[in-house]
Structure formats: structure tokens, C-alpha cells
Image (cartoon, rainbow, N blue to C red):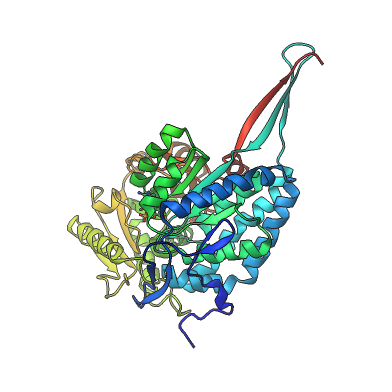
Length: 483
Ligand code: ADP
């Protein structure tokens, strides 16, 4: 049997989905590689600015009718889409693992998590209400209606090829917007399979398109367009800043979910088992390739030795290898650069007083060993840059104030975690952390029903929950007089 063969081979596509048609590009196709075998796994067309413009035109044409449809009808289509995603869960998971590398169990979890956004907005959106504001003078009625923003574009990263897309598509389509999405060049095949299921679910032509190819030309066409009213981007802070600048002349609405550099604070009064479980999930989910990954683990002196010993045992038991092999916890990383970064951060941590307590050098190919370095100095590279790999660096601290100061010493503020059993410490630290999300005694924070997003240079806006729907709505205030 072919490696990772699909039950439904038609879900593996080599065309882009533009205006309800599957199209090839003008230029040379772009190869999609399997990060474990390093061999080509699929290919995508480069639709360029022309294909992107065609998708935007189709989204513009489809918008008035889609926006006018009763929200219940839009939700019914999303519900069918969600059913199809779950029906094809195993195939979608295989595609995710083959193009992204992540362990199959994590890919399955991503399908469930990603589907959660389609499901949530299919259920929630029909119950979303407008407002009537008490009139300031007699004879008036003040209404607030919610309108779809219009044609939206999405640019998504490679680390969660399905979920980073569904958290944009779900609320956009439910709100009555139309959307053109550009997945990462490294992982476009999941997005195309998702589009194919959308077509089958009855998403009308032009309401949702997936354009593939080189990011500059596609991003340029998206940001320059006067028709496009909103950009939702998940990716690095420099690219986010550049896109925001490109959107400024046309005053597009923006949602930016950018870099993280999350801290985890473990206080002396933490429950050890809870702290270890929190660290394992917060650090190693998706092999550490997540913007909410605990990048800096700060542990108070009184619990440090016990914490390091228990964490070393857990990390030492993890298996890295082929993501398709059910036995493995960690698949290959996305590319050469990712391995180099992990190696660089490990060596730098070791040269900053660090002690290797589990794992070690990368064994070759795109694999990185789950690794623990203890007693790292607070100025090591891994405290400043996102490692985006399975390397945990632990830094000791003395007082609660020291811990909070170290945690906040970053221009980023997406997620932060703390472990403590003392309600006062939890309340104080929870209040003082400069972060959009705080995990308290848990590393598992993301869910479609809660608002996900950052402060400081981690971004703008929220995804998930009713706040995520509001990102795709304009408020219209209607002032009735003489009634
Ligand atoms: P990462 O570090 O996760 O690769 P990037 O910000 O480079 O983060 O990429 C996230 C997404 O942004 C990907 O879909 C990528 O193709 C896209 N991207 C990168 N550069 C540009 C650009 N200049 N214009 C538009 N999209 C871009």
C-alpha cells in the first residue's frame, strides 16, 4: 500500500479552487514535499495575481446573494461541511501528517479541533443578535444591526493547516462574508481537500476560493484590492506588519494572529503532576510548532529540582519518528531551517549555563529529539525567540514578582501559563501577565468557544467564540426619528 494512502483518493488535489472551478496556474507547478521522506508528495499550481484577482471577482459577485440569505441557510451549509469533515477525518489527518509531518494522533486531534470552528459557528451564528438602545429623546428608536464586512481574504500558516483556516472560514461565511484563502506553500493540500468538501456541502460558487502559489504575488493582489474589505492573517510578526502596511491605503479591517513566545510559570506551591502535564502539553503539542507553545519555562527554586527530574523522565520517554507511525509522539519538523533553529537554541542554552537532562542533538533528516535543558540563564536565545520545536528550556526564579517580571519581559503577549494551587498567586499572576490568553494549571487552552488572540506584538483581534464572529461584522447604527 502507498504510504499514507487515502480512502478517498479524490481528496488529494493538484489544482486551486477559484470561483467554483478547479484550475491550473500559468506558471510551473510547485512541489509539496513529505517532511519525513523528503520526497515529493503532491503539487499545486501557482495561480499568481491573475488567479487571485479572479477569485476576488467571484467573491464580490457572490457576496450580495450570500449576505442576503437567511443565516439559518448559511449555517445549514456549514453543518453539512462539518459532517463531511468528520466523515473524512482519517483522510484529512493523513494529508495533514504527510504535508506537515505531525504525528497522526495530533493530526486527528487537529481535524476535531479544526472542525470545531465550523460546527460552533454553524450552531451559534443564528442566535447572534443586534441591539435596541434606549432613545435619548422622545420619538426616536436607535437600532444596531450587524452586517457582513464583505469580501474577506485569509492567509494561513503551515503548523495547523486545517484549524488555522477553519477558524477564519467558519465565522466569515456564517456572518455572510465571502472569502478567498491562501494556505502556506508548504501545506496547501489540506486546504484544497477542505475546499472540495465545501463544494460537496453546497457552498455556492465564489463564496469560498482557495488560491495557491507564491505568497508575494497572491498577497499583493489581495492587499491592493479595493474590493477586499478585510484581511485575516496568522503567521509571523514581520509578515503581519508588512501585510498591515499594505492594507493601510485601502483601510481594510485586520485580524492578525502573530508570534507568541509564551512563558510558563511554575510556582513553589504548584501540584507537581499538574505542572508536568501542563508543561508537556504546552511545550510539546505539535512538536512545539505552535504560536502558543511554552517557549520559556520559569520554575521557582523550591520546586525546580523535583520538576526537572519528573519532566526529564517524561521527555526521555517520548518518541520522534515518522508521523504516520502510530507509536510516535513527535513527527519531523517542517523544514531544514526549523531543525537548525532547534539546534542553535539548544547549543546556546547549554552555553548559557544549561544542563542537558533529556534528549540531545537532532538525529538527522528533519527529526528533532524531544529535549530538556535545565538551569538555563534568563538571557539565553530561547527566552527571546520562538524555538518552534521540541526543546524545553527551564529557567529558575526566586520570588513571584521575579517570575512575573521575567514572563512579561517580551514584546509578545499571546499565551501564558501558570501553575499554582494558591488562589492568591493565581489571581495576582493571572491579573499581571501581559497576555491575551492565560492557562491556569493547564496547557490546553484553545477551543472554538473561547476568544483566541494576543496583545502587544502578538496581534489584533480574536478568533473563536462570538468575538470571532464580530471580526466579520460591521455595526450599522440606525437612528429612527419621528415615531
Ligand atoms: P511562518 O514563520 O509560519 O512560515 P510566515 O509569516 O512566513 O510564517 O507565513 C505565514 C503565511 O504568510 C504563509 O501562508 C505564507 O505563505 C504567507 N506569507 C509569507 N510572506 C508573505 C508575503 N510577503 N505576502 C503574503 N503572504 C505571505
